Length: 418
Image 1 (tube, rainbow, N blue to C red):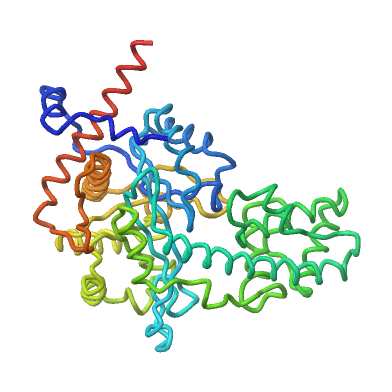
Image 2: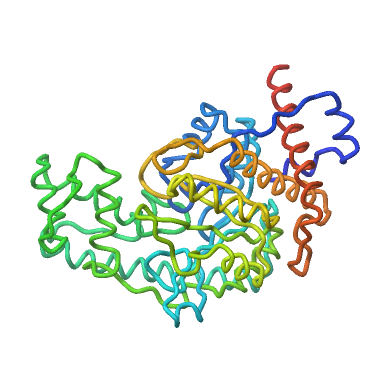
């Protein structure tokens, strides 16, 4: 499939065709959603596009773990629904020094564990054979851990009902696309419990027995919360089916960054920020130290999931990094069973203020400009050696907005002509 941006006009022609058309200060954008190609609240991409259309989301970014298998369908769906697509990816890596020192990065439970994104990758997605091999190894190790979890879970299930069993193959076929994850196992176990009998009491008793007698807090009436409870009680550390991940399951951060750059993307650090009690990880507790740490790694792009953050803490943090010239984008993840709106809000569903929306829109425009330049065979925001210049930021923001507005104008006009 060909990238739609490869057919876009030159910058001069874009300016000519959009002359006289006024642009809004910002539009609604969501730069980070997971899809069924990893794990997602969306049962299919059509659901995501329907919600985006209803909520007037102009730009949407796919951001699956390890895989880009969803890119073609996402690209096609965005064209049909007149939504500008951002092509992103997410990895789980390891900072070994931080792990040794017990420093938590952006995983609140595992020192040294780091979630890391790539923004605005080339589409079609291409990497070298060495990097493909690295990714295959990581995927293989992650699936070995998943299979071991399923085996341990089956041992627990057999004690309760010898006739019941889960299988990796059936879970993948029924709930996953490329990779089976913990959340897929939790969903499969919830569905298995429903086959025990028509009695919710019996179903819940089955799960509580697997919990080693621990009482359920959620009950059977809230499926999304129940899946989270199953994952917490059985698949996480201390649970009866927990299997510790082999370090082969994680790439070192510098290797992840190299993969992202080679794939045409912008390395981006996903910020966890405050939890509901106002606490931070050690890596993120001081914005100045975090800024210096990221700069040292050559990272000048961050993303946040504001729905998990306090509005005031978020604003202060974003203002600080915006003053440092960072690219900043927001998203909703949708990487849990809960179906939330695609419109980005802060904790408690509080709307973003105007300044935060503008900052997020600027970051979105930079990524759009980067994709446009790369699709035309030119260099985007990131240079081949991984460096970049914030001096180009204003130009990229303006270019990205022009590209997005041309896209929206072009597809709206085409729809009106039919």
